[in-house]
Amino acid sequence: MTGDRVLRVVATDGRGRPLAADAVGPWLERCAPRAARGDVAVALVGDRKMRALNQRYRGIDRATDVLAFPAAPAGGRAPRGAPRGLGHIGIATGGARRQARDAGEPLETELRRLALHGLLHLLGYDHTRDDGEMVRFERRLRKKGGIA
Image (cartoon, rainbow, N blue to C red):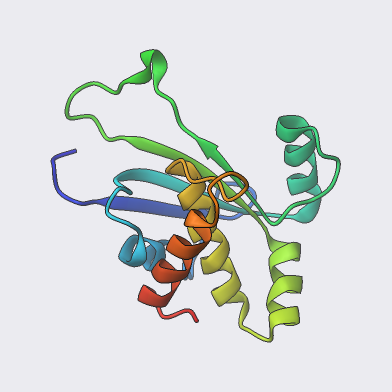
């Protein structure tokens, strides 16, 4: 990768197949913060799979709406010029549908909101410890992407 500001997002279904109508990837690439450079994989998975992932990696036995798995190359650094993998984002489709319905918004909007939230976690933001910094930043980025 060169010094250009480039974020590449690949969105897949729960079986790793690229989404035919990807409303998440191109949107996330457009509204992502400047620090987001590299490759991100977004997987839309069922609630059962998300519950299993949450149990395995966080020790919490319930589904959650989004999980972020930062990538860390062996030795902590990628070779010079190599693409930088930021990590993977998992989004629970059932939870996203329920949240979209409860908010009275399209599923596409909720998927985008969750993908952005996951991306910020990949970049090191942590809303549980930052006195609202992530929430404020996420709100500005959503507005940039046309989500109120």
